[in-house]
Amino acid sequence: MRAIILAAGRGSRMGASTEERHKCLMKVRGKRLIDWQLEALQACGLNEIGVVTGYRSSDLKEFNLKEFNNSRWHQTNMVISLTKANEWLSTSSCLVTYSDIFYMSSAIELLLNCKNNIAITYDKNWLNLWKNRFSDPLSDAESFKTNSSGMITEIGRKPSHVEEVEGQYMGLLKFSPTGWKTCSEMIEQLPVEERNTLHM
Image (cartoon, rainbow, N blue to C red; front, side, top):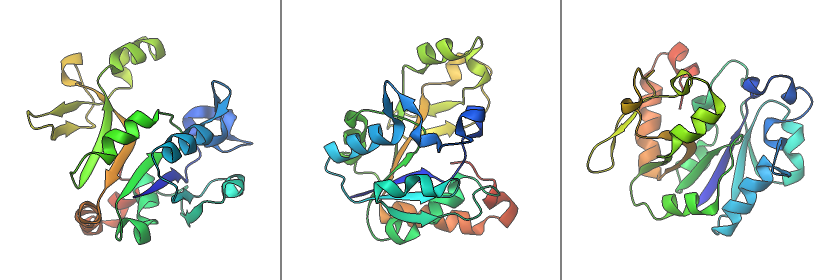
């Protein structure tokens, strides 16, 4: 299995912090986000790692990762950035991670052990974290519901009640080539305008 870090966007929610450095070079607990990620990925045996670049791509050269570039990063969303790594996604299973998050290797192991063609990690204990971040946790949360088989039945809608949120998507997912083929075919059927603004 390979890993792909999505690092094309600027991270505008971080404000001026990303004007002079890439968002994945921001530090958490004294370590850059990308260092946390590479350490967790490599601890799980994922040594073939690629990165989709765009904004401040030269900041990421030092890591010597396989580079896929989204030159239109400022006009498109993360899904289009992901399609730039089609060469890998269509030929081998890939773990995909946002570049502005950090996680432990245990989260990666959950995905590695999952046999489904498309799988994501989510945080069931989201509410405590969101309460620390926002006076109204629902102001930034998205709906998330699963069925008894663990399949997602709803995700991404603006929730009106906490009961509509079983967890929050973490920005860490996995595709098999079969799963990616299904997704890419759906993406290609969308009008260009919708494709460019599509959220993960």
